[in-house]
Image (tube, rainbow, N blue to C red; front, side, top):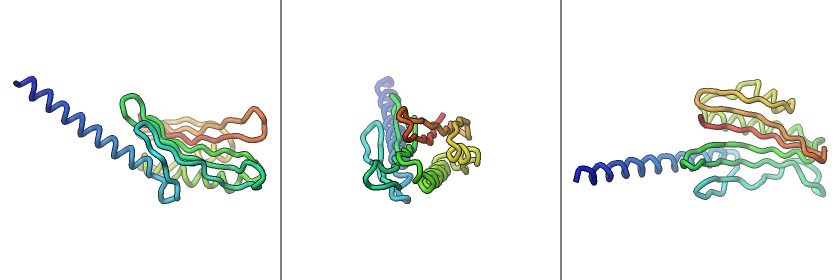
Length: 159
């Protein structure tokens, strides 16, 4: 009987923790709604559609998307923005958009301001990876093999 009660108690604790993590997951997925970035969710990740930014309409325009991923333990493992620069001559306002969203996301997730060195890395297309509080924050750039554009990733990983 004690074993049954203990098993039931452990089950209820795990159920409560799963619900709390799921609510946190929903909050993180909705973290950029104030910027009109909405996500589609399933049980393991959420993602926004690519939002078209600047560029000439006859070409693939610059765009940005937001993602949140869970790991096998049902915990958030990665929160990130991806800016694709398809038309580099239209990049300036789109880089500002990435910086603004990165600052907002950092404040919401870590309760800290985004250090200036990350903003500088975004502007200068350099990589940086550092720990802030209980999070790892990274800026990563990928130059595409075509040489016509690049991607910038702003990533937050809970430790």
